[in-house]
Amino acid sequence: MKRRRRQDIGTIPWEPTRYGNSHLGIPLEVWRPSGPCTLLIHAGIHGEEAETTIALSRALRLLTEPSHHCAVVLAANPDGLTRGTRGNARGVDLNRNFPTLDWKSDPVEHRSTLDDPRDVKLSPGSGPGSEPETRALVELIEELKPETVVALHAPLACIDDAKQGPLAHWIAERTGLPLVADVGYPTPGSFGTWGGEHDIGVVTYEFPLSTTDALVREHVPVLAELLAGEAKWS
Ligand SMILES: [Zn+2]
Image (cartoon, rainbow, N blue to C red; front, side, top):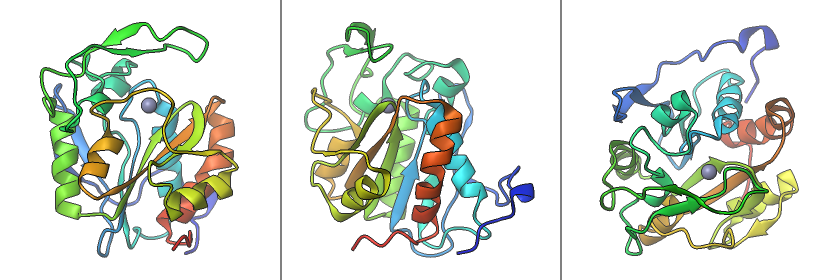
């Protein structure tokens, strides 16, 4: 698939559709593929990881036509992105709020930066799938039925796939990031666990700690190949 000229990449040329609303009423948007959906890539489920939204948007803007096979969610947690918080507007870490068998009501503890202890507390929600952003993403995936979902995060610098599937191998090889089977600490109620329970492949693509500019240079070409169907992994 051709790429748009640099002069033309300032805007996203196709309209998204709304798949729900955030708690604050911001539209949850998806750019749908022109054909059957086999892949979905989402970014910004943690509002502190705005670099994932920026990189995925840039990759989408490089396409000359909508992806044939890949749906794109640029901002899975728009309230967190506008407020600059990891959680949504209700203080819930959405990546611990999915309706999984292992969902726990214990507070979520995370590091505010990689060098800090894991002691900043967030809520996993009042129950599994309690948040509108979580429920809407689940319903979107149930409707689109992708085989695989790539979840963009930062800054752990790894490709995490419990099944170590072929797409995860491809991304790890293409980016030089290590392929791991887990992130090294429990993540009850995570999107990856939910996907595993529903036979959906989930690859967590963790950008390294870097500037947005450097991440765009290194990772936008990889994301564009995924969107354009040029990544051959099976
Ligand atoms: Zn994250």
